[in-house]
Length: 386
Length: 154
Image 1: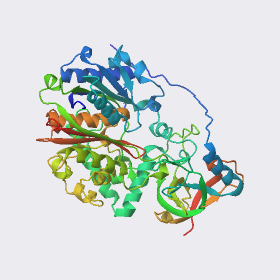
Image 2: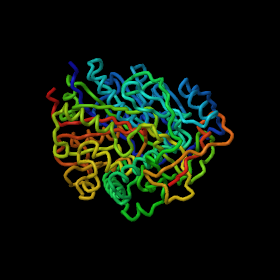
Image 3: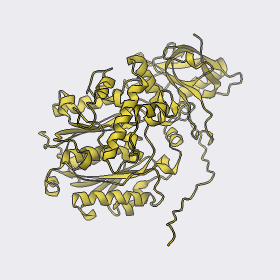
Image 4: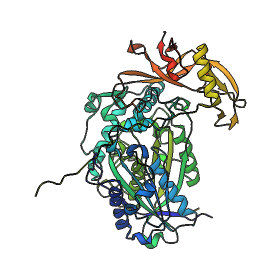
């Protein structure tokens, strides 16, 4: 029988476009220290470490080895996991598995990236098949633009519908001192910003960021001794659907549908829109804010734009999405998924300060990878009844 | 006291060439493309899906695939975008020339989409569902560039 697992502390850097004042190891250390302080633990209390990023952004492999001074993993078990854009969420799932297995009681999970150190689109392209997929591929934006075009052709959405999502997330970021971009944008500003790849404008997409995030997970045997009201992990899901870029069903995120269906069934969530109180969605561009909540089962296919436009996902609405400002406001890629997890945990623990959603019982955090992958975590205030 | 100075070290010119094996299925595709201007897919014996690029295993069925079938060279645009921003192309180390049409082509007879350039001489014609055909290079070497691009024929 697996142990129940809770998040007992989180830490983040103050994310910026460029941090020349720290190298990777020092950046990682900032997040680790913050998470230890938040949980009241010392590095000696940590039994194992999981770390992840996307090596090709820095061109340096094996962060599990070269960062041990900063990560605190010297002479401890450390495991590296990297799954592209989903990395930050996959390391959270990996931490959950380690603790649930009973092998370790307290696991430190670290995601980080220094995206300032290379050309992000060029580096992402190296994640794709050199023979078949690289000729025309242009990093994340090209694939996302193709998704948006397919969705618009199928459901009749417009670029204004996408822009509304950017307006929401950039407004929410004003409440988050850790976010990189903290300046409101208007619908007109989004639509007037340079066209990168039709229909995606500059202000529809995420920036690139230097930043790190750390999360501490503990087993049910020790969690409540560390933290009076921890964030309990109710379920995790992880779906990778295809081999080549052309294999995907453009306009639908099948992996999100599969992962969310599995988790909600396990937790007995029948009406996610009513039972989930907040979502931290790994949403690298605006249109995903419409499309992927349909795949998550929040609204019917084709109804996402109307739901977003109603204000239901704004702070104070029925189901706030991305109180942190989301990925459009901040994107240190290997940390991004773990920031979603940490922000969801903070919402459940009542530690989200100026971006707190009241009375959070269930929260969802997700990870997305450019290959149409979904990783997902369901967080809850109560200890799972299974 | 002077402002702190933070040093950033550039890697300088760096190159790391690779030699990629394309396997039995890839070799079949590229020899047919080079010698006969034919596009070959492969069919799963179980679910009957026709895959392009051809590959050894159908992922969902986990079945071995050997049944090659010719697909295209005509098809329709499954989805697309027009790239308008410049970035470093890791294939060349240079800025990629923009704008260019980026297509996912649903080739006749195939069930998956095939990525390639779309000619954007007339942008208004580029739409999901528009009919296209492959334009081949005169001198073909057995690479994906033996197709120059797809053009709209509607």
